[in-house]
Length: 213
Image (cartoon, rainbow, N blue to C red; front, side, top):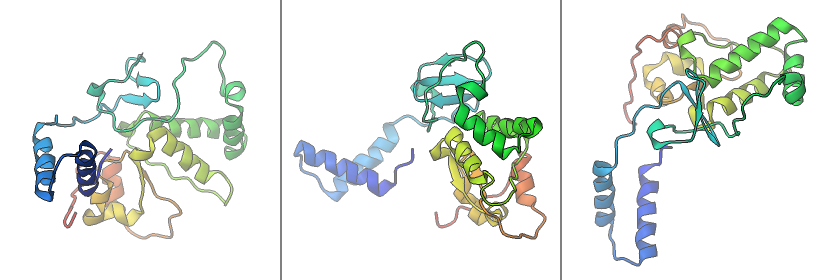
């Protein structure tokens, strides 16, 4: 989790106060700069790993293991992972979710499978599928709930909201760095070629201008 520099400096000052040690703004700045040099560099989290409250699931091997600093996970799903049991089904073991799913899909098995595949794509971070999700429907049809479930699966710290203009503008695009789930809620009528959206979805390199950040 990213901590603003000013907040971290205040935390260091609070530590000095609790220790009743003399300090100054210069000493605080020196401590912060020294810590930057000695703490280990944070590595990129492995895309195949899904963090839960009680451990980590490797989606390639199917193995579940305890948390480790070497995983470098920045967030996790706020639920416990439980191994599947024989005969387990959504309809009987997750009845509330199943009722929402069945209603959102209009009781269509094919649409249920599409929604479940979309949620799995978010959960497993399958950006390599090179797809983006467009969810349409009248008010009260389940669009917002789907977005909330997707956010839960991705992890709150991994999700952000934007609009299509943000994807198309290199300056605005800088605000999306580090997020695995980008929500575009309630999009108004938009006109353009969608080059940024297509490039990001396809895994192509895109320009980013983080000026003034």
